[in-house]
Length: 107
Image (tube, rainbow, N blue to C red; front, side, top):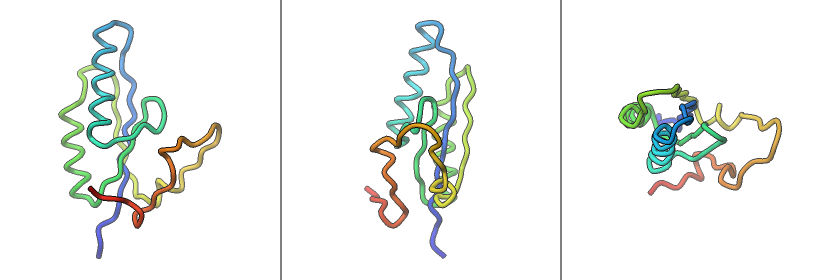
């Protein structure tokens, strides 16, 4: 049986009232982007991984970049579940172009 593609979705709400808090929040966003996440919407980022082993690896990497304050949540769903997500208001971003597991380019 082949490994399933999964999506990791990170939701966060970080304090940004003071300059140092904004710096920490921006660093967290940049770290997510460096780790292959894309912004789905403000404070919601996602990335695709292959199989449960990769989910565990990326959970550990996320743990290492967590800020000390705020709320950060992680949701793991199958690619099929992710593809069933509906956009109710607004328009999809160009980077949201549907890419299924067969079209995924691995570098």
